[in-house]
Image 1 (cartoon, protein in one colour):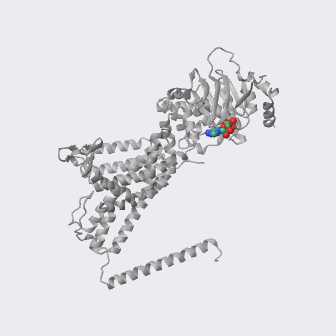
Image 2 (tube, protein in one colour):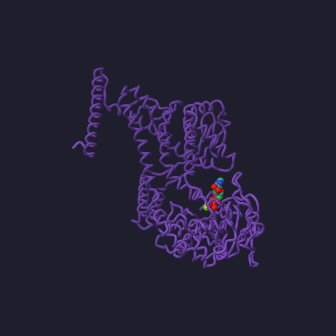
Image 3 (tube, chains in turn blue, cyan):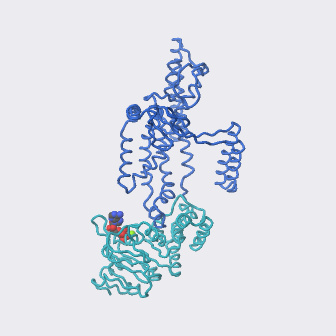
Length: 371
Length: 260
Ligand SMILES: Nc1ncnc2c1ncn2[C@@H]1O[C@H](COP(=O)(O)OP(=O)(O)O)[C@@H](O)[C@H]1O
Ligand SMILES: [Mg+2]
C-alpha cells in the first residue's frame, strides 16, 4: 500500500501538517502561559479602547481620542494611499522610460539609462534620506516656490498639487457604484456573448444618468498663491512628498527595465509586419507591441507592486506615519505586541495577496488564444 | 545569356510606362559584411518576378530593402517614381503601396483574424470601421477563409495563417506584393493552398516579387527568374531558358541541388 504514489503522498502530507500544527500549538500555548504568568493581558479587546496616540498626518480624519482600531485604519489608509500613488505613477513613468531607453535618440536613451541605473543600484532608504535632505537644503521658502509643472508648487513646506474633488451626496455615490459594477459585469458578459454588445453602454448610460441625477460636481481645485500661503489644491508635507517621489523614482527604474524586456520579448517580425503595413512606430508600439508585452510583464510587474507595498514601510525613515509606524506606536503604547505583530503580518499578507490575485485575474483575461 | 560584364546591366522594360521598382547600383553592408553587391534590377508594372538562390545569398535582404525594412547604403531604389531616402514621409507612402508576406506569417497574435485585417485600413488609411470590416471580409473571401474571421491566429493552421497574411496585405490595396519564402515554413500539404492563392493574385495582374524555391510555381507564373548568389544577381532570365539552359555555372549547380 505504501508503494502507491498517491497514498504515499497523502500520508506524507498529513504527517507534515500534523508536525506543523503540533509545533504551532506548542508555540502558542507556551507563549500564552508565559504572558499570563507575567500578568500581560492577551486578546483583541483593546482595539475598541481610546488610543490616545498621535498620528502626525492622515488621509482619513483621525483624532487621538479615537479608538485603536481607527488608528490602525488610519495607518492602513496612509500605506494604501502611498502604495497606490507610487504604483500608478511608476507604471506610467516606467512605461515611458523603458520605451525611451530603446529609442534611437542617444540623449533620450542615455538619460533614461542613468535613471534606471541610479534607481536600481541605490538602496531605497538612501534615496529617501537624500531626497528628504533636499527639501530643507535646496527648495526655496514658500514665497518663492518652484513651479515645475502647471499647478504643482514645491517649497520647503512641501508640495502643493491640484486636487480633484467629487462633490456628491452619499446615496448618489451608491447609485454610481452600483451602475459602474453593473456596467463592468455587462461588459464582461457582452464579451462572452451572453448579452448583446449594446448592454454595457446602456448600463453605463444609466450610471451616467445616476451621476447626473445625484447632481455630482467634479471639480479640479487649482492651488493659488495668496502672498504668504496657498489657497486651494492639496498640500503634501515634505515627509509625504519625499516618500511618494522617492519610491516613485526607485520603482520606475525597475518598471522601466521590465518594460524594456517586454518590448524586446516581442519578436522583430511583429515590427516588420507593422512597418510593412505602413503603420508608424508610435502606432506599432501602441497597437501591436504594448498589448503583447503586457502578457509578459504582468507577473514581474506584480512583484514590483508588492515591493512597493513593502518599501512603503521605509516611510519611517522620514517620519511619515505609515501603517507599520502607527502599529509600532500602538504596540509600545498598548503592550499588545503579539496581537500587533499578527495584525501587521495579516495586513501586509492581505494587501499583497490582493495585488497578486488582481494580477492573476488580468493575466487570465488577456491570455493569447492558442489552438 | 548574360556575360559577366553584361550582367550588371538589367534588361530594360519593354514598355515605356514608369517601372514599378528600379534598383540602380544598390549596395548594402552589415557592418563590414557586403551583403548586396551592385544590384541593378528593374521591375515593370504587372510583372511577376521569382527570386531564388542559395540560403544566405541576400534574397530576403534585397526585397526588404524595397519597403525599407532594411536600409541600403549606396545606389538608388525608386518605387513607383519615388526614391527611397531617409525621408520618413516618403517611406510611409511607399510602404502603403507595397504589401509584404513573410515566411513566418507575422500575424498579430493578440488580435482576431478580422482585427488583423482591419488594423491598417483603420489606422493608416483612416477608413471607418464598417468600411474596413467590409474590405477585410472581401479579402477573406478571396483567400477562401471568411468563416475564420473571428478566430485568433493561433487557432488556424499554417496554410490558413499564411492566406490571412496575404489578405491582410491586400487590404491596403497595394500596387506591389513582396513574398519572402511564403511556403517554406508550411507543412507540405498546406503549400498548395497558399500557392493557389498566389497564382490567383498573379492572374489578376498584381506586380509580384517572390522569393521561393517552388519551381513549379515559378514555371507557372514567373515572367522572369532572378538567381542570386553571394549578394549578387548572377543570372536573370525567363523561366523556360533558366530551367532548360542556365547560362551560369552557379545557377546550374543550384538547379541541380534543388530539383532533386
Ligand atoms: N541583421 C543582420 N545583421 C548581420 N548580418 C545579417 C543580418 N541579416 C542577414 N544577415 C546576413 O546577410 C546574408 C544574407 O541574408 P539573407 O538576405 O537573409 O539571405 P537569404 O534570404 O538569401 O537566405 C546572410 O549571410 C546573413 O547571415
Ligand atoms: Mg531569406
